[in-house]
Image 1 (tube, rainbow, N blue to C red):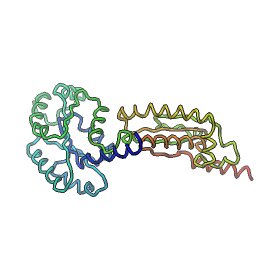
Image 2 (image 1 turned 120 degrees about the vertical axis):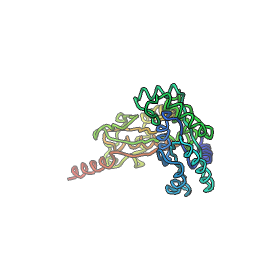
Image 3 (image 1 turned 180 degrees about the vertical axis):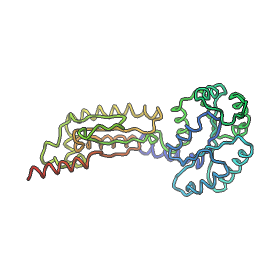
Image 4 (image 1 turned 60 degrees about the vertical axis):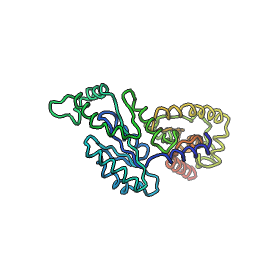
Length: 316
């Protein structure tokens, strides 16, 4: 998808995403996991909020201020009084020109009972002497009206967490699929330790090293002369073709998996020349593909300072 297509898709998504999402449903159906997903999508999230407080909270966090922020709350609607509050809340939000959607998460009784058995937790509404099965049936009856009112009902009985995240992102995110993956590309120097946080790590120490050219020793991969030296090399050109093809295959897989964050580390000896130039080129390629990319150079300042000290010592 080209840049114009990505911009049109982003505008389309932003126009249909509600200002407020109220999450409710059966206990054990995945409300907590859903709220975590909304948090990853950039929503301001509150757990277990009485419906009558939603309009005040929307005003408090500036949902209607035009900054593009959205609110997601989980609400326990098992009592009729709270359900009545929800209908009033939707009306009040509409009066303030705020859109609201109700998300209802459900699962079969058998699956819910199995989940409570596996987690060894008591059902939150179970009374003394009441079995989990009885509590589930009673809760289902209490939530019947809320389920009927919901804008979206998702049955999580046979749904993995990654699939639930994908469904919620498709319905409630104003970002494209690529933008939902937060990509961190950074350079580093092996002499200062390997990064533990990297999901993908590439070693570029096999490339010709500008460090051995006295005129480039104190420059960095951010300098045009060094970048030309690194990127113009035949070996680098062959490597970059293979490296970018690998990313073009792997990145859509991470998106489909529902991965929220991905760290890509590019390492050379000192973290000053080769890794910086390759990390810059990697980030530029991913940005052109529509990904949200944060670019950083972990050891660059230390490497430059060390090179300057070595040069001063040599001159002395």
